[in-house]
Every structure is written in structure tokens, then in C-alpha cells.
Image (tube, rainbow, N blue to C red; front, side):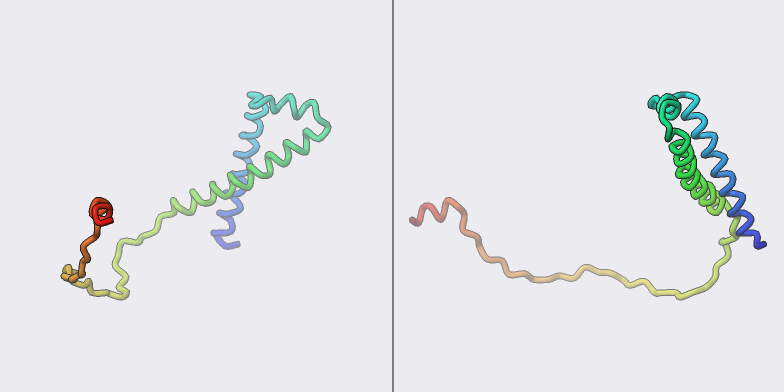
Length: 111
């Protein structure tokens, strides 16, 4: 199995373990009276499972992204590529004809 696939599976497992700890802490500390809601409802186990599953998906994605971003990549050597020359940018004078505006006072005085 390729190393990247092994690393992905490992990070997904870690993400779901973190999700289980997170959901356990939510229930332990009774955040938003969640433990009471789960214990008093017949669909409580389904709610806990879905909470664990969806948080596990998020935590697994974040865990994998952190691992990928922290990988060591030697990207210091120059690789060539297209060398584009920079342009010398100088401001150009553009003449714009301006018509005199009639002010409000001037319009009122003529009428």
C-alpha cells in the first residue's frame, strides 16, 4: 500500500478518535443540556452516532490537512521556468477637455 494511503487512513482514524473524545466531553460536561436530551429520547443513540460521525468527518479532514501541510518539502532550489521581463511603467500625460459647469447660483440668476 502506498505511503500516502497509509498516512490518510492513519489520520482519518486519529480524526475519528478525536471526534469520539469531543462528543464524550460534550456529553460529560452536559453542554446545552445535551446529555439529558440524549438520555431522555429514544433516538438519543442515533443522535450521538450522527454527532460522532459528522464531527469525525470534519476532524479527519482537518487532521489530514494539518499532516499534509506539515510535510517537509525541499522547495528552496531554483527550478527555472519562464523569466518574464518587468516593464518600466512611466505615467503618461493625457489631456482631457473640461467644460465649465454652471453652478446652481448661476442658473438661478439667469431665470
